[in-house]
Image 1 (cartoon, helix red, strand yellow):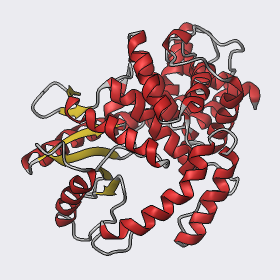
Image 2 (cartoon, helix red, strand yellow):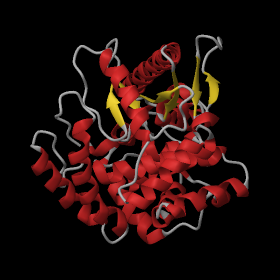
Image 3 (spheres, helix red, strand yellow):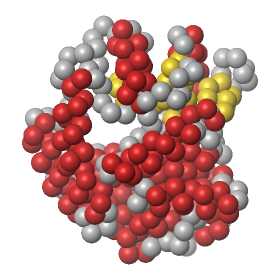
Length: 382
Protein backbone atom coordinates (compact mmCIF):
# COMPACT_ATOMS: atom_id res chain seq x y z
CA UNK A 1 0.00 0.00 0.00
CA UNK A 2 2.88 2.36 0.82
CA UNK A 3 4.33 1.85 -2.65
CA UNK A 4 0.98 2.60 -4.28
CA UNK A 5 0.53 5.65 -2.04
CA UNK A 6 3.92 7.01 -3.12
CA UNK A 7 3.01 6.49 -6.76
CA UNK A 8 -0.24 8.34 -6.08
CA UNK A 9 1.63 11.32 -4.62
CA UNK A 10 4.03 11.33 -7.56
CA UNK A 11 1.11 11.14 -10.00
CA UNK A 12 -0.30 14.33 -8.46
CA UNK A 13 3.10 16.03 -8.62
CA UNK A 14 3.37 15.14 -12.32
CA UNK A 15 -0.08 16.64 -12.87
CA UNK A 16 1.17 19.83 -11.17
CA UNK A 17 4.40 19.81 -13.27
CA UNK A 18 6.54 19.49 -10.17
CA UNK A 19 8.24 16.30 -11.28
CA UNK A 20 8.96 14.69 -14.61
CA UNK A 21 8.68 10.98 -13.86
CA UNK A 22 7.96 8.35 -11.23
CA UNK A 23 10.67 7.01 -8.96
CA UNK A 24 9.03 3.59 -9.48
CA UNK A 25 6.79 3.69 -12.57
CA UNK A 26 3.26 2.26 -12.28
CA UNK A 27 2.52 -0.83 -14.32
CA UNK A 28 -0.84 -1.50 -15.93
CA UNK A 29 -2.12 -3.36 -12.85
CA UNK A 30 -1.42 -0.35 -10.58
CA UNK A 31 -3.80 2.04 -12.31
CA UNK A 32 -7.01 0.66 -10.82
CA UNK A 33 -5.65 1.27 -7.32
CA UNK A 34 -4.45 4.75 -8.30
CA UNK A 35 -7.87 5.60 -9.72
CA UNK A 36 -9.48 4.42 -6.49
CA UNK A 37 -7.23 6.73 -4.46
CA UNK A 38 -8.12 9.60 -6.78
CA UNK A 39 -11.80 8.90 -6.23
CA UNK A 40 -11.44 8.68 -2.43
CA UNK A 41 -9.92 12.15 -2.38
CA UNK A 42 -12.07 13.64 -5.18
CA UNK A 43 -9.03 14.13 -7.37
CA UNK A 44 -10.24 12.09 -10.33
CA UNK A 45 -9.74 14.94 -12.81
CA UNK A 46 -6.33 15.96 -11.46
CA UNK A 47 -5.15 12.34 -11.44
CA UNK A 48 -6.29 11.96 -15.04
CA UNK A 49 -4.17 14.96 -16.02
CA UNK A 50 -1.17 13.33 -14.35
CA UNK A 51 -1.84 10.03 -16.10
CA UNK A 52 -2.16 11.80 -19.46
CA UNK A 53 1.15 13.60 -18.92
CA UNK A 54 2.99 10.47 -17.77
CA UNK A 55 1.70 8.38 -20.67
CA UNK A 56 2.54 11.15 -23.14
CA UNK A 57 6.10 11.27 -21.83
CA UNK A 58 6.26 7.43 -21.86
CA UNK A 59 7.49 7.28 -18.27
CA UNK A 60 5.07 4.49 -17.29
CA UNK A 61 2.84 1.79 -18.69
CA UNK A 62 -0.60 3.11 -19.71
CA UNK A 63 -3.77 1.82 -18.04
CA UNK A 64 -5.90 -0.83 -19.69
CA UNK A 65 -7.95 0.75 -22.47
CA UNK A 66 -11.23 -0.05 -20.65
CA UNK A 67 -10.01 1.68 -17.48
CA UNK A 68 -8.70 4.67 -19.41
CA UNK A 69 -12.02 5.13 -21.21
CA UNK A 70 -14.01 4.83 -17.98
CA UNK A 71 -11.69 7.37 -16.35
CA UNK A 72 -12.07 9.73 -19.28
CA UNK A 73 -15.87 9.54 -19.05
CA UNK A 74 -15.71 10.47 -15.36
CA UNK A 75 -13.55 13.46 -16.20
CA UNK A 76 -15.94 14.61 -18.91
CA UNK A 77 -18.79 14.53 -16.38
CA UNK A 78 -16.69 16.60 -13.98
CA UNK A 79 -15.97 19.16 -16.71
CA UNK A 80 -19.63 19.37 -17.73
CA UNK A 81 -20.66 19.77 -14.08
CA UNK A 82 -18.15 22.57 -13.60
CA UNK A 83 -19.41 24.46 -16.64
CA UNK A 84 -22.94 24.29 -15.25
CA UNK A 85 -21.85 25.29 -11.77
CA UNK A 86 -19.87 28.26 -13.05
CA UNK A 87 -23.01 29.46 -14.80
CA UNK A 88 -25.09 28.84 -11.67
CA UNK A 89 -22.62 30.83 -9.54
CA UNK A 90 -22.90 33.81 -11.90
CA UNK A 91 -26.70 33.61 -11.94
CA UNK A 92 -26.89 33.29 -8.16
CA UNK A 93 -24.78 36.37 -7.50
CA UNK A 94 -26.89 38.35 -9.98
CA UNK A 95 -30.09 37.25 -8.17
CA UNK A 96 -28.71 38.51 -4.86
CA UNK A 97 -27.51 41.75 -6.45
CA UNK A 98 -31.00 42.53 -7.77
CA UNK A 99 -32.45 41.90 -4.30
CA UNK A 100 -30.10 44.38 -2.64
CA UNK A 101 -27.40 42.01 -1.40
CA UNK A 102 -23.67 41.87 -2.08
CA UNK A 103 -22.11 38.43 -2.40
CA UNK A 104 -18.91 36.54 -3.00
CA UNK A 105 -18.43 32.93 -4.15
CA UNK A 106 -16.32 30.94 -1.67
CA UNK A 107 -14.16 27.83 -2.16
CA UNK A 108 -15.25 25.64 -5.10
CA UNK A 109 -15.62 27.70 -8.25
CA UNK A 110 -13.65 30.57 -6.74
CA UNK A 111 -10.61 28.36 -6.13
CA UNK A 112 -10.91 26.56 -9.46
CA UNK A 113 -9.53 29.69 -11.13
CA UNK A 114 -6.14 28.89 -9.56
CA UNK A 115 -5.89 25.52 -11.31
CA UNK A 116 -4.19 25.04 -14.67
CA UNK A 117 -7.27 23.12 -15.83
CA UNK A 118 -10.11 24.60 -13.73
CA UNK A 119 -12.79 22.30 -15.14
CA UNK A 120 -10.99 19.23 -13.78
CA UNK A 121 -11.28 20.28 -10.15
CA UNK A 122 -14.17 18.23 -8.76
CA UNK A 123 -16.96 20.48 -7.57
CA UNK A 124 -19.09 20.21 -4.48
CA UNK A 125 -21.95 22.52 -3.60
CA UNK A 126 -21.99 26.27 -4.20
CA UNK A 127 -20.92 28.36 -1.20
CA UNK A 128 -21.79 32.04 -1.36
CA UNK A 129 -21.08 34.71 1.25
CA UNK A 130 -23.98 37.18 1.33
CA UNK A 131 -24.55 40.48 3.15
CA UNK A 132 -26.90 43.47 2.75
CA UNK A 133 -25.35 45.88 0.25
CA UNK A 134 -24.00 49.02 1.89
CA UNK A 135 -24.28 47.55 5.39
CA UNK A 136 -20.84 45.99 5.65
CA UNK A 137 -20.28 47.73 9.01
CA UNK A 138 -23.40 46.17 10.55
CA UNK A 139 -22.87 43.51 13.25
CA UNK A 140 -22.80 39.91 12.07
CA UNK A 141 -26.02 39.19 13.99
CA UNK A 142 -27.91 41.86 12.04
CA UNK A 143 -26.49 40.75 8.69
CA UNK A 144 -27.43 37.18 9.52
CA UNK A 145 -30.98 38.16 10.39
CA UNK A 146 -31.56 40.06 7.15
CA UNK A 147 -30.02 37.42 4.88
CA UNK A 148 -31.77 34.52 6.64
CA UNK A 149 -35.17 36.26 6.49
CA UNK A 150 -34.78 36.89 2.77
CA UNK A 151 -33.62 33.35 1.99
CA UNK A 152 -36.32 31.62 4.03
CA UNK A 153 -38.96 33.82 2.40
CA UNK A 154 -37.97 32.33 -0.97
CA UNK A 155 -38.31 28.71 0.18
CA UNK A 156 -41.33 26.47 0.64
CA UNK A 157 -39.82 25.03 3.81
CA UNK A 158 -37.72 27.30 6.04
CA UNK A 159 -34.18 26.06 6.59
CA UNK A 160 -32.28 25.83 9.85
CA UNK A 161 -29.89 28.68 10.50
CA UNK A 162 -26.55 28.15 12.23
CA UNK A 163 -23.81 30.58 13.17
CA UNK A 164 -22.14 30.88 9.80
CA UNK A 165 -24.53 29.55 7.14
CA UNK A 166 -27.84 28.02 6.05
CA UNK A 167 -28.95 25.80 3.18
CA UNK A 168 -30.60 27.57 0.25
CA UNK A 169 -31.92 24.83 -2.07
CA UNK A 170 -33.42 26.86 -4.91
CA UNK A 171 -34.06 25.45 -8.38
CA UNK A 172 -32.82 22.07 -7.25
CA UNK A 173 -29.30 23.39 -6.62
CA UNK A 174 -27.16 22.47 -3.62
CA UNK A 175 -26.31 25.91 -2.24
CA UNK A 176 -25.04 27.14 1.12
CA UNK A 177 -25.50 30.80 1.97
CA UNK A 178 -22.85 32.05 4.39
CA UNK A 179 -23.33 34.93 6.80
CA UNK A 180 -19.61 34.69 7.51
CA UNK A 181 -17.15 32.37 5.78
CA UNK A 182 -16.06 30.48 8.91
CA UNK A 183 -15.43 30.60 12.65
CA UNK A 184 -13.08 29.50 15.44
CA UNK A 185 -14.16 27.71 18.61
CA UNK A 186 -12.03 29.86 20.91
CA UNK A 187 -13.93 33.14 21.51
CA UNK A 188 -10.91 35.46 21.24
CA UNK A 189 -9.66 33.75 18.09
CA UNK A 190 -13.14 33.91 16.59
CA UNK A 191 -13.41 37.65 17.21
CA UNK A 192 -10.06 38.15 15.51
CA UNK A 193 -11.10 36.00 12.56
CA UNK A 194 -14.38 37.88 12.09
CA UNK A 195 -12.54 41.23 12.15
CA UNK A 196 -10.13 39.96 9.50
CA UNK A 197 -12.95 38.64 7.28
CA UNK A 198 -15.02 41.82 7.65
CA UNK A 199 -12.00 43.81 6.49
CA UNK A 200 -11.93 41.82 3.26
CA UNK A 201 -15.65 42.08 2.59
CA UNK A 202 -15.37 44.91 0.07
CA UNK A 203 -12.16 43.64 -1.55
CA UNK A 204 -13.75 40.82 -3.58
CA UNK A 205 -12.83 40.93 -7.25
CA UNK A 206 -14.87 39.91 -10.28
CA UNK A 207 -13.78 36.68 -11.96
CA UNK A 208 -14.98 35.79 -15.47
CA UNK A 209 -14.98 32.03 -16.07
CA UNK A 210 -16.31 32.24 -19.63
CA UNK A 211 -16.31 34.52 -22.60
CA UNK A 212 -19.06 36.88 -21.46
CA UNK A 213 -18.34 39.18 -18.53
CA UNK A 214 -22.05 39.96 -18.13
CA UNK A 215 -23.24 36.35 -17.81
CA UNK A 216 -20.16 34.34 -16.78
CA UNK A 217 -18.67 36.48 -14.01
CA UNK A 218 -18.97 36.29 -10.23
CA UNK A 219 -17.08 37.88 -7.30
CA UNK A 220 -14.28 35.89 -5.63
CA UNK A 221 -12.20 36.56 -2.50
CA UNK A 222 -8.74 38.08 -2.60
CA UNK A 223 -5.77 35.76 -2.26
CA UNK A 224 -5.04 37.47 1.07
CA UNK A 225 -8.40 36.29 2.37
CA UNK A 226 -8.07 32.81 0.86
CA UNK A 227 -4.67 32.29 2.49
CA UNK A 228 -6.45 32.54 5.84
CA UNK A 229 -10.00 31.42 5.12
CA UNK A 230 -9.20 28.27 3.13
CA UNK A 231 -6.82 27.07 5.86
CA UNK A 232 -9.41 27.78 8.57
CA UNK A 233 -11.99 25.88 6.50
CA UNK A 234 -9.66 22.85 6.36
CA UNK A 235 -9.08 23.19 10.11
CA UNK A 236 -12.83 23.16 10.75
CA UNK A 237 -13.39 20.00 8.70
CA UNK A 238 -10.50 18.24 10.43
CA UNK A 239 -12.44 18.44 13.70
CA UNK A 240 -15.94 18.02 12.29
CA UNK A 241 -15.74 15.16 9.78
CA UNK A 242 -12.35 14.73 8.21
CA UNK A 243 -10.63 16.12 5.15
CA UNK A 244 -9.41 14.78 1.85
CA UNK A 245 -6.54 15.78 -0.38
CA UNK A 246 -8.74 17.92 -2.62
CA UNK A 247 -9.09 20.50 0.15
CA UNK A 248 -5.34 20.42 0.71
CA UNK A 249 -4.65 20.81 -3.00
CA UNK A 250 -6.87 23.91 -2.97
CA UNK A 251 -4.56 25.45 -0.38
CA UNK A 252 -1.51 24.38 -2.34
CA UNK A 253 -2.91 26.31 -5.31
CA UNK A 254 -3.47 29.38 -3.13
CA UNK A 255 0.14 29.29 -1.92
CA UNK A 256 1.45 28.67 -5.43
CA UNK A 257 -0.34 31.83 -6.59
CA UNK A 258 1.12 33.88 -3.72
CA UNK A 259 4.05 35.97 -4.94
CA UNK A 260 5.86 37.92 -2.23
CA UNK A 261 7.47 37.15 1.12
CA UNK A 262 5.60 40.10 2.62
CA UNK A 263 2.27 38.47 1.71
CA UNK A 264 3.38 35.26 3.38
CA UNK A 265 4.56 37.10 6.51
CA UNK A 266 1.29 39.02 6.78
CA UNK A 267 -0.71 35.83 6.44
CA UNK A 268 1.36 34.09 9.09
CA UNK A 269 0.79 37.01 11.46
CA UNK A 270 -2.98 36.56 11.13
CA UNK A 271 -2.79 32.78 11.54
CA UNK A 272 -0.61 33.13 14.65
CA UNK A 273 -3.21 35.47 16.14
CA UNK A 274 -5.72 32.62 15.67
CA UNK A 275 -3.48 30.14 17.47
CA UNK A 276 -2.91 28.04 14.36
CA UNK A 277 0.90 27.96 14.20
CA UNK A 278 1.23 24.22 14.72
CA UNK A 279 -1.46 23.41 12.19
CA UNK A 280 0.21 25.70 9.61
CA UNK A 281 3.57 23.97 10.17
CA UNK A 282 1.91 20.55 9.82
CA UNK A 283 0.18 21.63 6.62
CA UNK A 284 3.44 22.88 5.11
CA UNK A 285 5.00 19.45 5.65
CA UNK A 286 1.99 17.65 4.15
CA UNK A 287 1.84 19.94 1.12
CA UNK A 288 5.50 19.29 0.43
CA UNK A 289 5.23 15.53 0.99
CA UNK A 290 2.12 15.03 -1.13
CA UNK A 291 2.23 17.76 -3.78
CA UNK A 292 5.88 18.78 -3.78
CA UNK A 293 5.27 22.38 -2.64
CA UNK A 294 8.52 24.34 -2.83
CA UNK A 295 9.92 25.61 0.48
CA UNK A 296 10.01 29.15 -0.95
CA UNK A 297 6.21 29.09 -1.16
CA UNK A 298 5.69 27.97 2.44
CA UNK A 299 4.32 30.19 5.18
CA UNK A 300 6.68 28.79 7.82
CA UNK A 301 9.09 25.97 8.54
CA UNK A 302 7.35 22.58 8.19
CA UNK A 303 6.86 20.36 11.23
CA UNK A 304 7.39 16.71 10.30
CA UNK A 305 6.03 15.23 13.55
CA UNK A 306 2.64 16.94 13.52
CA UNK A 307 2.63 16.79 9.71
CA UNK A 308 2.86 13.00 9.73
CA UNK A 309 -0.07 12.80 12.15
CA UNK A 310 -2.10 15.16 9.99
CA UNK A 311 -1.35 13.17 6.82
CA UNK A 312 -2.38 9.98 8.62
CA UNK A 313 -5.75 11.58 9.39
CA UNK A 314 -6.22 12.78 5.83
CA UNK A 315 -5.40 9.43 4.26
CA UNK A 316 -7.70 7.53 6.63
CA UNK A 317 -10.61 9.96 6.31
CA UNK A 318 -10.83 10.64 2.60
CA UNK A 319 -13.06 13.43 1.36
CA UNK A 320 -15.13 14.73 4.33
CA UNK A 321 -14.43 11.54 6.28
CA UNK A 322 -16.46 9.27 3.98
CA UNK A 323 -13.93 6.46 4.30
CA UNK A 324 -13.10 6.78 7.98
CA UNK A 325 -14.12 3.67 9.90
CA UNK A 326 -12.65 4.70 13.26
CA UNK A 327 -15.85 5.75 14.97
CA UNK A 328 -17.37 8.16 12.48
CA UNK A 329 -19.81 10.87 13.53
CA UNK A 330 -23.31 9.86 12.46
CA UNK A 331 -26.14 12.25 11.70
CA UNK A 332 -28.64 9.47 12.44
CA UNK A 333 -28.29 9.97 16.19
CA UNK A 334 -29.81 12.70 18.35
CA UNK A 335 -27.96 15.88 19.17
CA UNK A 336 -26.68 14.62 22.55
CA UNK A 337 -25.28 11.39 21.10
CA UNK A 338 -23.74 13.28 18.20
CA UNK A 339 -22.20 15.77 20.63
CA UNK A 340 -20.59 12.86 22.50
CA UNK A 341 -19.32 11.31 19.28
CA UNK A 342 -17.66 14.55 18.23
CA UNK A 343 -15.98 15.00 21.62
CA UNK A 344 -14.67 11.44 21.56
CA UNK A 345 -13.40 11.82 18.00
CA UNK A 346 -11.59 15.07 18.73
CA UNK A 347 -9.67 13.73 21.71
CA UNK A 348 -7.09 12.36 19.28
CA UNK A 349 -6.24 15.95 18.30
CA UNK A 350 -5.74 17.14 21.89
CA UNK A 351 -1.93 16.91 21.88
CA UNK A 352 -1.52 18.97 18.70
CA UNK A 353 -4.38 21.47 19.00
CA UNK A 354 -5.38 21.69 22.68
CA UNK A 355 -7.03 25.14 22.59
CA UNK A 356 -9.40 24.19 19.78
CA UNK A 357 -10.31 20.81 21.30
CA UNK A 358 -10.90 22.21 24.79
CA UNK A 359 -12.95 25.19 23.61
CA UNK A 360 -15.10 23.20 21.20
CA UNK A 361 -17.57 21.71 23.78
CA UNK A 362 -18.31 25.16 25.19
CA UNK A 363 -18.72 26.60 21.70
CA UNK A 364 -21.21 23.90 20.75
CA UNK A 365 -23.21 24.28 23.97
CA UNK A 366 -23.36 28.07 23.51
CA UNK A 367 -24.29 27.68 19.86
CA UNK A 368 -27.07 25.19 20.63
CA UNK A 369 -28.54 27.61 23.14
CA UNK A 370 -28.43 30.85 21.13
CA UNK A 371 -29.11 29.44 17.66
CA UNK A 372 -32.78 28.79 18.46
CA UNK A 373 -33.53 32.47 17.94
CA UNK A 374 -32.10 32.39 14.39
CA UNK A 375 -34.40 29.80 12.84
CA UNK A 376 -38.12 30.10 12.20
CA UNK A 377 -38.90 26.60 13.51
CA UNK A 378 -36.82 27.01 16.70
CA UNK A 379 -35.30 23.61 16.06
CA UNK A 380 -31.73 24.25 15.05
CA UNK A 381 -29.01 21.66 15.56
CA UNK A 382 -25.28 22.11 15.11
